[in-house]
Image 1 (cartoon, rainbow, N blue to C red):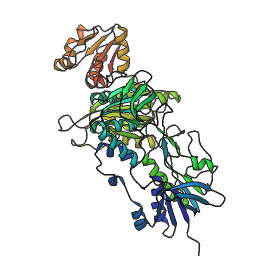
Image 2 (cartoon, rainbow, N blue to C red):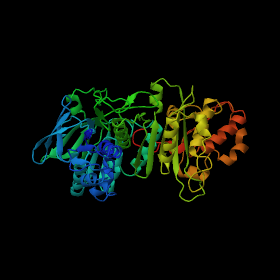
Image 3 (cartoon, rainbow, N blue to C red):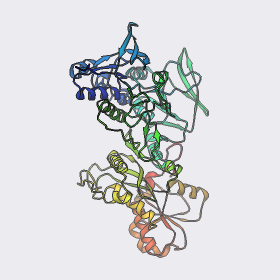
Image 4 (cartoon, rainbow, N blue to C red):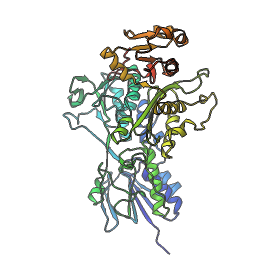
Length: 562
């Protein structure tokens, strides 16, 4: 009788427990052990900001399955608070230390899975080790932030980094009653995943919630009193605070893999093949310690996501047992709740696409997620990036109070399957008033891209319009909103002419056909319709503002330009 297969898994976050559970389903006789250096296993680390905010009431709610449950349900042994010190590939052994009593241990393996995750990046600046400065990786980190927020005397918090965790933590600490300042070295929020238009709309919303945005500023030092942080200094100013959360990214935790001589990739990641196999065929790796191939570009990217880690675990267990399922890669899907806004992206952005040599056409459309007559409809804005040559969809982004993420998921599917913009324009999406418009915003965005590619319409971005106004160019800014809308948000620019949409036809003779006309409304829809009217009337240089005033905001502070 063949000996039972010994599977040892280093790391108990997302990938490791998934690999263990799948392996057990494939082999009832395997000896499966998870080694975890924390007191918890299989917990939802992505839920930590919501634990800080109070939305998740207790840390136990974050635990998917504890060690006792793993043993009882899956017959998987979990060694908690146990550090792996070394991997001996020649003898197929790992050497461990129990962090509670210091006891040394040795585990034999037939197959080893490394799922050690990633470590937060901490800036190498003066004062970084002061008390009151935290990253957010584990449950104790979140508990320490909660305790400090409650005990805070100044009630002032600084968040370093305006990425996904930074935005989530801004909301969480505002919910805790703190005055929050976000310091970001780049000039936009969520700058590494969002294009300028979507990022700026997000920033305007965040600033409107009372968050102080310090964009384009770098942290240079922290100062403290009695060993506790009391201020954060950027390259421009000093900010008083007694709580700091650093959220500037993570790096793969590959120390064990490096010391074991496994191949390491360009991101400091453990190199794996399509079956998540390392350079040692008996060792697999998955989760945040590996990079993934981007299906759009064919290049590897380091994009740590719990959703991806779970898929890795499934593929690993399958390959251990001869099921040749490969991991195909990712399309860079990400989403985040930012106060009342839903924000998402998929594929590649406009700047990235151009940098890779794509000749792209983009479209930006604002609309409601349900019919305007249906109670509860909310505004959303979608951006689409398309390759002109193949008409293949390369990426998409969205922001707004409405159901953005539904549209991002549709685009993720479309990009994965290699769909063209023409296919998207006619995609048979579900329609009923409680859920959608008869034509979804994705249909409108796809049609706008097609119209632009085929030269049927011209558009201008809000940033381009701002530049024209700043230069005081000679053109007509045709505002087709109602008088009531215009009174609420006045465009005090000399180029502006207010003619409500319903009055444009009767007023065409008052406009100079030889002059450039830029048409503007709140969302861009009325402006597009009037642009078509002017084109039909012989206006050669008529264009409309994509996304409308919804997408018009300041580059740095997030405040409106108008």
